[in-house]
Image (cartoon, rainbow, N blue to C red):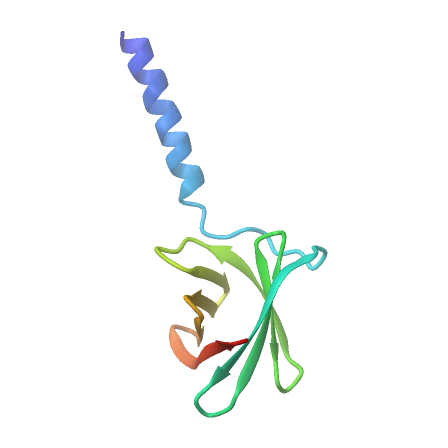
Length: 109
């Protein structure tokens, strides 16, 4: 009985460790599975290309791009890379740098 309990505990701990993983390793080589253009009230835009390897490439108006990896989220789709965070939920998105929101926008059809 003790062996069974220890085996079950080891399995649960392994599952817990896997589910706590917050990001995947970014890779620039993966196909796009979805895309969206988000517009802020100021008119600023960010385009997001969602990729099959759990990453997103953000394209900014000035030509800058950022590759972020999928992260744990209570709801919506959340991606991070260092101080950068992209969080989309029900057509609304926020882009934060060092926990400061610098963009809030809505998906355009």
